[in-house]
Structure formats: structure tokens, C-alpha cells
Length: 156
Image (cartoon, rainbow, N blue to C red; front, top):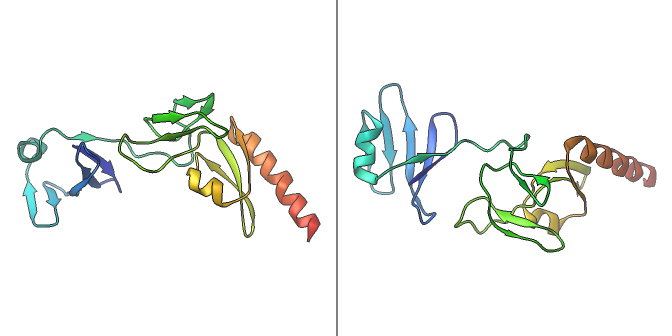
């Protein structure tokens, strides 16, 4: 089982097959497990693990900072990467059973009000919008975004 953080005290408990099992909440002296059918409380993690098996608590991903991992020479925001596919745009998955593909590096993506900087956007976001990138660091991406937004303002 994997516990993916939602907040500092709440986690989604996922099976090894990537399916949602339940919701964990850490309270002062209890751990609460809510599933579709029941709610159980445990005084210690070991008691919970007797019921569901070993639990790996994952670190929350940072959406503004790159991890130490790189894919194709570009930073990623996830702690682990899976199924890297190199094509015109290199992509990866953040978990083995995910259907979502992420794109490494810093990107400038155009929305209705202009370009915005992103670290590792979803591939779907790139395919639905104009973009510039990838960039190896935030400064490069911010510079490109600033130039693109300035050009957009001059067109108006």
C-alpha cells in the first residue's frame, strides 16, 4: 500500500495496483481509516498495517521546486518517474499505474491572459495550448515567458 499525501495529516491510501483503497487521517492520538464501507480507528500504525499490510508514506510532490531527478537532462517535480517515452516531447509517468503523462522541464504555456511558467506540466496541457520550452531552469523559462507576453501586449 502507498499513502499519498493530501495535506499534512490526510493521505489517500492506494493499493499496489494503483486503486484507491481509502482515506487516512492522522489525529492527535489516532489514525482513522475511511473506506467506502467503514471507518476504523487505530492507536498506532502497526495496528493499521496488520489490517492492510505494509504502508509506504510518500512525500508530497513540490509543484514549484524541481526534485533531484532529471529526465532527458530536464528537471522533474516528482520523486519517482516511470515509463519514460522519448519522442518529439519526452514524457513520463509519476506512478507505475497512472494514465497521466508528465513532461519534464520548465515550460511557458499560453492561456487566455498570456503565458505562465510551469514545471513539468501534464502532456494534455501542452497539447491543448500554445507553449514554449522545455527549459532546464526556472530563470530561462521566466525570461522566455516575459518575452512572449511582451510580444502579445504589442500585438493588442
